[in-house]
Length: 287
Image 1 (cartoon, rainbow, N blue to C red):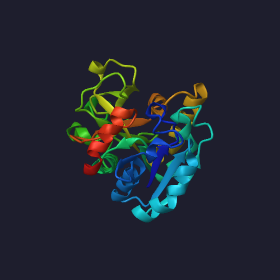
Image 2: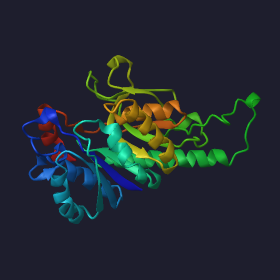
Image 3: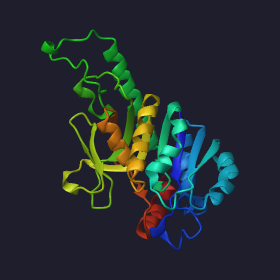
Image 4: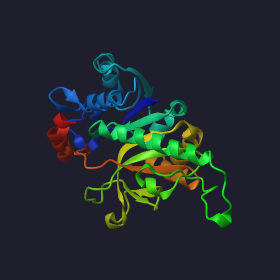
């Protein structure tokens, strides 16, 4: 498995701090940047290879690669998005599709959080695969027995008491969600079914109807590589202004499984504006 960071955006709401600099390179603890924390977390989760999707001010990220590799003990590849200032991140993630088949731990390049989130996703993936393996070893039960054969969904790591499921045919991705914090209009909100599987993901939703916030981290399991890449392509070709989360919704509609993994009581922030940046600088030393 490899790490992947989306760091192509312009960060317009953070100007003038992002004039000529991607927000992933904003300092949040002395000289430590958001990107430093992101790659440090991926390394702490045991990953040694990282892909960074760059676009706006890409040369500045490229200049930092040797130091990031030395400081965190990883090797880094860059994927260039020449449309980053025009198109949204569904296209950015699609550009890195060749890596999906290796398994990817994806992190938005504007999120400050502790490494416990990456470890939660890895644990959720291991638990779902173990549950599916157990189910595969059992004889299939008939419909009359009320068994789960053929449902195509794994038991979520967060709902271990609900019984196991077979591996989904189109593969599985696992998203990190915060189901504790209060939600408002700006958050990327999710609605889940009783098994913790994604039903809906959008910012345009009454917060009262949401089960939590997607926090910008996803584990893409290798079997999902082809279907997810195709879903992302369909999404950006429909409208290049769409988010990769819209690609996740497309993946769900096609039969792919998106499992939600709650992160627990964790200090984190998505840095979209100057208030978020101040919050990031408050908590960065504890991440």
